[in-house]
Image 1 (spheres, rainbow, N blue to C red):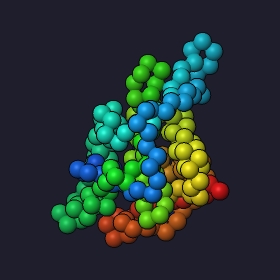
Image 2: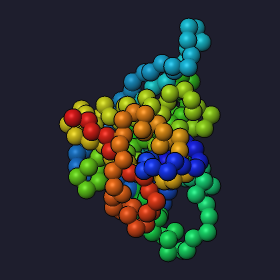
Image 3: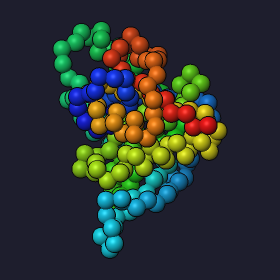
Length: 210
């Protein structure tokens, strides 16, 4: 999950938060790089001599910087979605959001010009598809175009591997994330497993890349 609270009424999507031990992923192709892959981008909100740069780094899932960003996401999403619920439901949600590191195809960080990691996303295999997971932009970095640039980088990785589409899931209290996905061409699809019963109010999306 990425970004804000309270959602629109139509289906939408990004990954709900949970970093339970052994979080989720699948194994179609081994793409994760052992050496970080770096790409530099300009901050679209800055110009001239004040312009700031950020870059993408392909890292391992267990990179400590990635783990810190995922932990921040968990804190934010727990606060956003906190409410009464049965232990059974809580367990079901946790299980649905768990990621097996063996399923991770790529983990991407956005690193600011001063070396600070400011955003994170991952791709995993899921029932033959590539699924976008764990999208988070640090709250003090939102509005710089970082989220859009990060999603574009995920698409670049998927296209390079010949993937026909990306899918994702999000919850009902992330309207900013939903708005971003819709702006960049994601369209609603039916809720898919493992979210159908565990998180029935999920918003699920796809983007065709071919």
